[in-house]
Length: 233
Image (tube, rainbow, N blue to C red; front, side, top):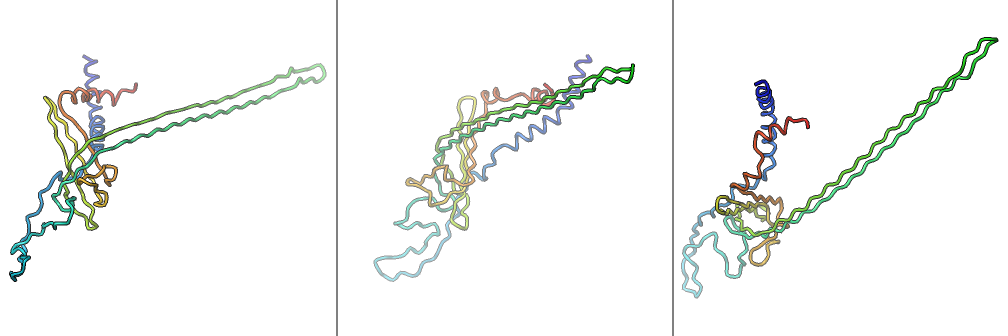
């Protein structure tokens, strides 16, 4: 009974720590621009001038989102779609080595002392000290993320850059996966086919997550996180 009460007390003390850890984990979630999609604004009717009988007759009602014949189809207005080619490759490595060595020695000698018939034997004191430290560490990371996702223009900045955001949800049997992408696109980097590479997207935020039995199996339980936070070994 005492052991059960002790474990309960440890769990009660560790709950705030676990909550803090859970909160810190939540802060690491990618904050993708919202909303993920928008609808284009309703066209504004513009009344054209009267007909003059010429070969070219302007429409009586023209729309603000009218696109000229010789203008390309790249995204430029709110609600337009843009295909993002995700091609992220990140590799990083770090190595560090530290060594320190310190030595010291001290000696003290007292000679024999003799005064008449009285004598005192001498002695010596010797001390040595040595301190050594050596440490090293290596770290490496290599991540590759490729795919294709079509996003929607959710805002047009004053300088013409486009803020885009989009997501793709896939349901597979008992689980689901979703990909979210957002960022700022310079229209000059838009390639043929109305596509742009993710490497040219500014402030790119890419998130790939899943849910279901497989995802739950890879998640540590809350009680395990509690004991992991308080165990000193």
